[in-house]
Amino acid sequence: MQLPTIHESWRLERNATGLARQFSFESYSQTRRFLDALADLSEREGYYPNLNFNRTQVNVGIEADAKTLGSKEYGFAAQTDTLISDRLVDEGE
Image (cartoon, rainbow, N blue to C red; front, side):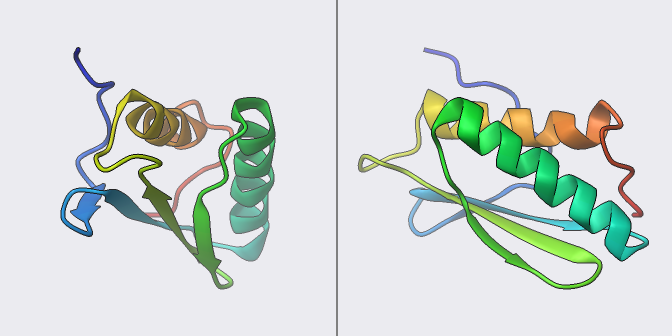
């Protein structure tokens, strides 16, 4: 089974049982739009990542439900990437 493609900024963590990525924005309003879009995605998918954020940064952590990461986790990461690539929010990197 081939896993969905994710942005190169995602890092493997916890002995390959987690993914993490930091998103940076130019303003709090951009950060808020991203968080709102991510909340909508979470509700649709029934998956809730770990979040840590401040005014212009959001850290997203995705942990495996099983012993290893699978298509569910990689799929959620890929959909999170689309929040930026589809210009739902503008990332200020």
